[in-house]
Image (cartoon, rainbow, N blue to C red; front, side, top):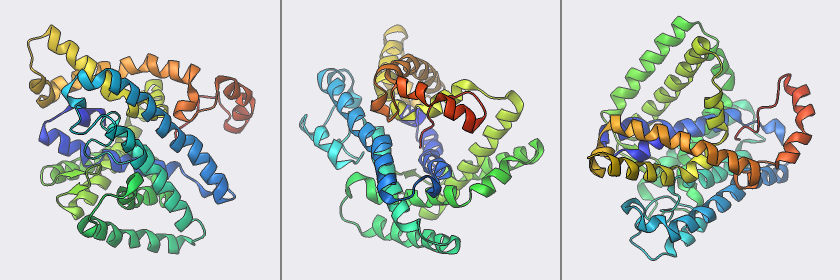
Length: 347
């Protein structure tokens, strides 16, 4: 996601956007279980706390930063509308245009909130076979929305129609995923290479951007997205088998909400630093994939202390319990998990 927002290189962007957001939806579905909730009210209360409240608070904080500093700091944050447009955009919940220019990546958070509510209400009481049929039925709904809907629905509901395909596959086929990652290193490597080849083939022939609701080829989009998801899952397992547990990866995964909200601010500051120190134009930084990768690394590391401060003093902003509450549940977590508590995990 950070790489995609850093680059203006069409080939590099098309490669990343072919699978990054579908991967997020897929993993969210993979981690979801109906068994955690007895009623819809329990589910809704949990998702309001974990997604809706963080979405609103993160956007309000980011809006203040944007209004008093960043909208005059970099052309990336210059809005074509009045200063209050992006404030109202928080409640409209769409990332296209200038509606969330202060915090554009958070469109995913509110879209996921809409998606999960739809998924829970539609799929909860269905049998397994009925769930498969219902999931397939969302495909024509995606097509109809893409081709005939004259306006953008609030809270990313139209994008949720597409995202629910990946979310549902991740949720309904999690047993298959577990079977996949138990394969040998050789088989995982072969699958990863083949999936990467398919992803590369698709990325060179189509353009997709879920936030903008752009799909130059709808069929190829789904092929490339699932190929990218397969590649990431198998490659991650290969890395785990080869290098073991890497704590920084887990830390980043557990704090994606904060990263979504503030990585553009930090990345812009890093870009400005490079511009001041080296004789490189902003267009060269954005167009060059190698330089872009260099920008991404310090962006992530500069976010780490900010994440720590947020988790320590303002955890409610990212949907986490206070430090005292986390300490209070530590013994129960240790008993349940059989290992030291590592913090709250996303969805």
